[in-house]
Length: 411
Image (cartoon, rainbow, N blue to C red; front, top):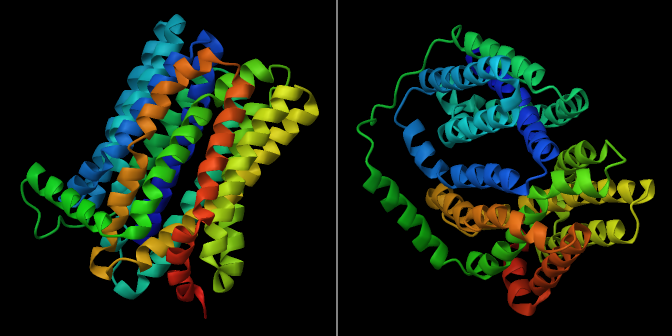
């Protein structure tokens, strides 16, 4: 477990400041340029990188986890160092440097994210420790997510890209050094040349499993609409905070922290009620309520831009995080139960890819949509669309399928 804990600490020191810097970067890019197109570009690249994670997962399976992790963190360090040096000599290029670091990190994350999700089994000596190992990874990720939101608040408050980059650089350097104390795991015995055809064959296999799963097929159109609306709104958050609530500096970071904390609260609530879950009620209700929260954000800021309205927006994002977390846990648990144990990973990967395929389009559309209509009104309209689509899951055809798996949550 010592090797795993060291690797988790290294990942923590890599993820924490990086998450904070990326959150700050979206805000900074709009604050300096008032150009939503730049924010839209950063978001679109990040979403495309997320879709390409299927290739990253395949690559990580072919190499030693620690050696590959060291290489990727070293590459991240080099890119951040280059950006920092450029900013020292060309401070007027701060927006370009910030965007460069974010884009470079998105590309690295194509491999890095699936790698860190899968390194626990390779770093333990006894399979009986796997659950404990995964709990360590999950705990570190949750803490990093919360703390990074707080650090992002500091970055926004000081608003000095060079200082933020130096902090990020030092943390990534320590992360790299820590991995030097770990004995690398061996590359998998079956590792060989990377075959793109094999990746696509696995992907197509996952698609075929989805095609025969009625629960997933029915949710695809709803998920695509909901995800589109959400990511348009999320990419407009920096512009929303700066233009609508310009007099309240805390709104942008307040939304980020509230959403993060809400997700963790939702997971904790689920852990307390998991034995009495009725997915036929919980899934449609949480999906509809999270959509309603965003509609309230829009109507509240449309009616008034007071401190009360700003507070309502933050509280709504907290509630959104709670409902979204509970829905995600319940829904993906049902998906897992509806598939063969031998194909669960393939099924989940295919589902996440299908549900996410709309995300780059949404992030790209945030710019033109944000310029076409008043932001509070746009958020309200998108929120209402999400509500109307979400309530469809109360229809009998959805209810029958959810009820079929409700027994899986009973004691």
